[in-house]
View (cartoon, helix red, strand yellow):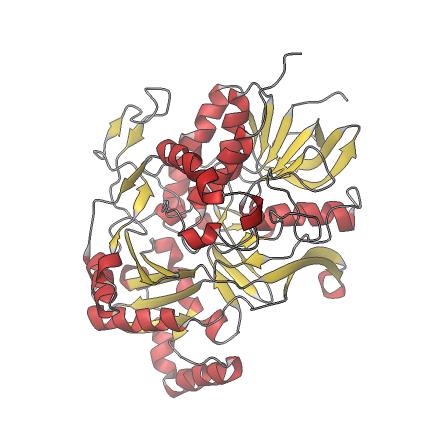
Length: 523
């Protein structure tokens, strides 16, 4: 077949950018397709100040770097980055390796010695992403340390390792790649990591992997949305629509889906069930979706408190063998998330818990109205992200509905086994301990407590690595069963809850996957 490129990569996040650089180094002609735009420092500065510049909602004319998605069983409140650099634009730059239990999970343990297999790739990814322990500890970190002490795990508290340049805050030559990388500036602790770093301190992928890939000839097509994939001779045709070019399709013998869980699932489902151009994709597509077994709690500080200075996340601890907790601070543009928060309530039974929430709200309506409309909320809020390496899951399907005017869309549903949690007692205990340390008021996320909906910043799975097409979608080399040349290399291929922030693991898996490719043969 006549091909436009050797490899088309859909998505420019951790897996897409890693794959682009490593394939270009092996001589492949590579194009990266990204639905978002190139974001300038000025764009990201505005994204930290106002919601309308932060959020991605094209139907409303919003083209910021952050997408949020809500489904029947799960809300994805963060971690969906839209723009050249993908999720790295709005992630908190936390780069952690999971504990040993992750590699031994029965979902994939028989396919490789994953801990040994990934060790060198973790090292390489850490080097590329400029990992360093956060040197700054502020009041919020001291409160988290006291929380760990109160919970009896003081020894597990530590600064987080992060992909941030902590050098002087003025413009300096590239400190990472012997002058081949871009000019950088050190962190000024503005707290805007999760709206996009305007300082140039965060080591987002457009400043390392993707930057170097472009130097090797990788082409990036921004503002380009992929609808589906079809067979084209011995390879594939990617059907697309761009805002800045007239292309309607590109052909290549090999295609890598790296669009994140929701993006990759939607493209694969559309190819199988809507356009029917890849009708034999595995039946396990959409199964084994994980929320990283997360819960999100918060503590609204007392009036006059300002804890907004620092990186978004700067410290963490392990509450027990499988529970990991980080603190978060927010920039101004995240003020809208105050509407997600309500009273902290315990109950393992969803209906009783919801009734308790409603009762608490009705007993103090003016108090809660004041909370939801507090102008300085972002200055006072401490959010705890609680993650577990536990076995629970849900699933996604793809259907057309009359109430959507017969349009196809992703839908979540419950699956076999334990459901992704909507209540973690460890999270509520941590919130209460933090409140004892800091003062203020502990909060739950209302979609969890009132709506019995899991909430996560780190959605995983849906096109998972497995031993057969009845168990998953891709093999241990990330190739789709029955579809030579079609790969899924992103968070959707991860078959178990990571239990910590998963970005480094996604990057390491991409490093491993491309290390298995041969060098391109000369024409």
